[in-house]
Length: 493
Image 1 (tube, one colour):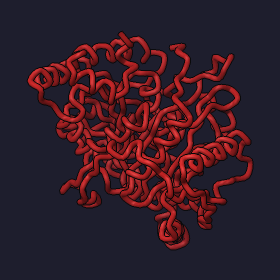
Image 2 (cartoon, helix red, strand yellow):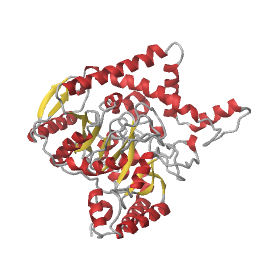
Image 3 (cartoon, helix red, strand yellow):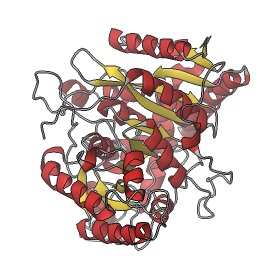
Image 4 (cartoon, one colour):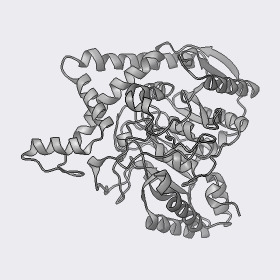
């Protein structure tokens, strides 16, 4: 029999429903794989063996009666940003030491209601602040991919690095993730997986530890486009506990896969040809354009003139919201508490010891841009730029463009503790250059594996869609997937 952990969600679903395999059997296979590989990859920060087996046993009972939800018996990994009742939820930060919530996030509640099984909590950049999964209190996650002929450990991207690494290394059938400026799509591209970031408001943010509330959105990382469609269908919902969630029907995303894209207009934005972009990325982009054209789509050159301001505006808006959101971690009610001579001293010591370097940097930037005398000059201006970025997209879509095709990242995965990146935070921030506009405009985006670079490392293409038109992204993403084929790492762990 095929190794059970190599099955996609759709394949496992068929076998479970056909009673060819049991949920308990599938879950045990994943738990064994995690126990063997996690010491090398560091993808999980908590593994819930007993809970997973209990959930799988319940799924087997339902399946034996011919019942069960859309994800019945499917083992998933959960990013450490999602509240899971009674289970480690620390956003991979020291400041939340020992926190186990007494409630469940809406997204994970939806998954459990559909029968999914929780394998454990996945590593991530601390408070989702990072592009390489090196800022986690629990140490960096390793990418399952390595360059040909090299033993150098590579980053999986961030902040959802644990999600991407675990899916790529067959340590879960799929994973939840979050995207504030590219934290689903960038790690997906660097690990040869599919990452869907839905429209802002498509999934509830309730029970997800906040980074930047107007930008954060839950999504999924999976092995293929079909699995991403299956996961998003279960995750998405309106939620009275989150007033930014949108009350509109959740389509059957899987049903659109394989539908023709003939006659669709695919936009190619000239502003995404950035200085210093490797030739391999341009070549991959041209391949993607050819695949779209061969499938019958019309290729249209477009302009998104305010793209060049997106990254600086993002790194004003996101830290400002983070500064406000992270003010609640003070050592009083939960998490780390460092004793001090008085309450102010306790606050200072708890926060100084609890937050990592990158989180402190962003809190300080955010506090500065919100301070008296600078609010208008920085934060207000960045919000005006954000409006212009959104308008660029609206004008392009109003002109008849159905989706926009771009690279997902400016390069393949780089080394852990890369000296250039470590010495210059701006170089690290530039990893999000193709993805942040999507969050600034609240749009959906998907990253799909599209090829390998000269060193044999995965590269992805990104598709950007109209608000709440994830169906078009799944249709067009499926075309790229069919043309490019599947990519898997050579196992070393």
